[in-house]
Length: 77
Figure 1: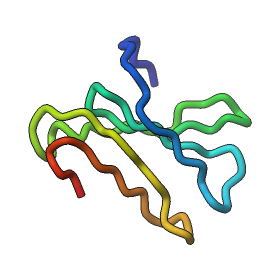
Figure 2: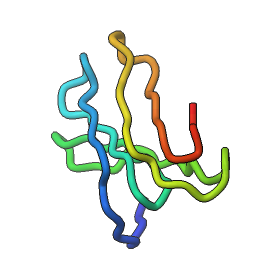
Figure 3: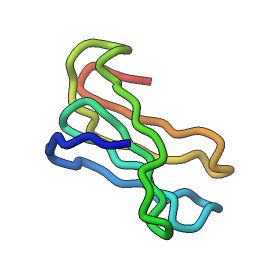
Figure 4: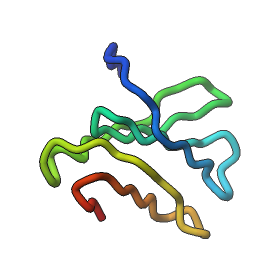
């Protein structure tokens, strides 16, 4: 899985129970999941498909780690 596009990372969230799993929120409207231990890119999602062309400004996992919440200029939920 490769994306050779470089944009500003606006936020990073660490998974509360899965050590080494992080989510990043980008100014390009994408949020990504990485495994820092294995150095693998797990998944990426475009918020642009959901609600126009907006930067994601923050992200956080729920306390149990089952949900990743992202927010951007367009009021993403």
